[in-house]
Length: 381
Image 1 (cartoon, rainbow, N blue to C red):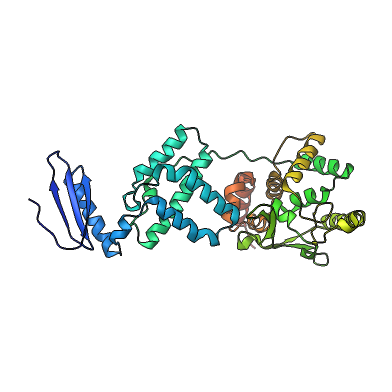
Image 2: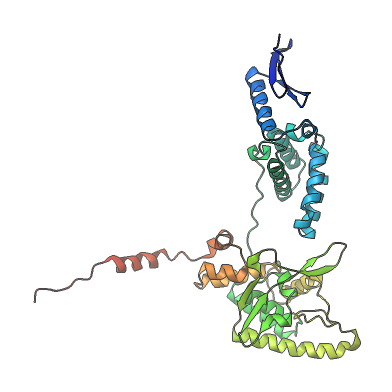
């Protein structure tokens, strides 16, 4: 017969069916767990007692993953961008809660989560989607550990599938010339934008968020300090960059400055043509009436331009890759390229573009030979 225990202590006994029943009293109320072995039951008791020492209450043991994640979403909303928060909500309610939501948070095990990942793969969900589910679950459970609701993150012991890395696409120097010559010859209204996209490696949202007040002609530089993003309720808005590194200064060459000045003159003509319809927002790349440009319209224009230029179909974002590849292949140091792109760390640039950097191993070997070979000095005289 099991020995009775006091509050916040445990007991264990073997059942007739061969399993073991472990029990712990928390705040005068009993928690139980059925284990396959005595050792498993004892480990459960030790784990619960540790959690009690860290602040576990009986009410916390009754919280389901669904209740916890709904509260978690409310708590993180102010710290996330609208699109990110919307994605978190969709991932949680569409993929996580229908399978795991009713499980008590403290009873959530690695195999529960792993089974969700495996099920999604079997059902044909993209590996990128499964990876997003993993990211949301992991971040939520990290928060649960910080709150003391669970002692460790069960997602740490899972193996989520890794999405295949998409092959990077970019234009070479000849193709870049072909693209820009075609845009210039057709008087494409986005010619200056395409030129600037390649010359600076700026993101589409950053380009569409540029204002003339960001351009310093005397210093020959642009200050990136906002981007065009989707806003809650529909439409677009100008927001600050996601990271501190995204707010950056980019130096421009004389030809790029000249192209922007010509673009400014063309915009004055457009303003006169629009008349009272013009809405002045100081944007460098607005619509025909001065409002923020539509991403879809820019994408369609870019696709038409590629076709007219006889170039392969690539994404607009690949112009950023193109700019980075041109810099790295011409010997510009990674740290300079990283700052120009607005990466938080040079290691990010290396992870994305490291394979583009010419190895120049033979040149390095010759240089080291020169540095290490002693100079022969004739001292016989």
